[in-house]
Length: 224
Image (cartoon, rainbow, N blue to C red; front, side, top):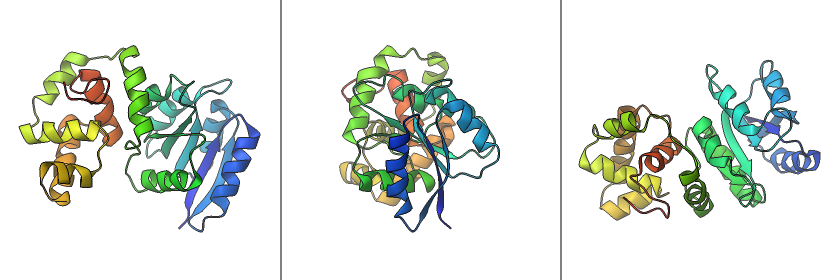
């Protein structure tokens, strides 16, 4: 079954370009479009969607709040934020709101398609260096809430799990973590699963957000 994609962007030309790229893929189908967040929420009430490509800056309702409202629904579609790195201070907030990752609007088509497939399969797009740079730039500017309870929750992790969490937050894949720690990839996957369960997190994106908010990873990607 094809991945059902919704395009949410106030620029018609951009939506047209994305639609052309996706239409050429046998495993993807653009089933809906919207020019702002309000329209997107209305369309989603009557349309089955697997992945939403979400712009950040839009009239009426921006992409961050739209993402937050989508992710509060039961069994929501995955949201992939599209941003312009030098301008959008809101991409990190989009991750906090529940997005499964974000990409630059000028991303090569192959990377965009890979990201859509990744979030659809339940993974999160957090590895690219652009992600780490944007987190490094904006995380210190965004106030965190409930930091003390979050720090207490980190105490539930074993030393190895904390080590794996730091490497996940630095953007390493399971394979890269396995090589760094001399473990099997299956073992790393098990550790990541336990981290998500113990900290009540949805995916790797939320691991990154929590690591930055609690300060166990500093701007620049280094461990605290």
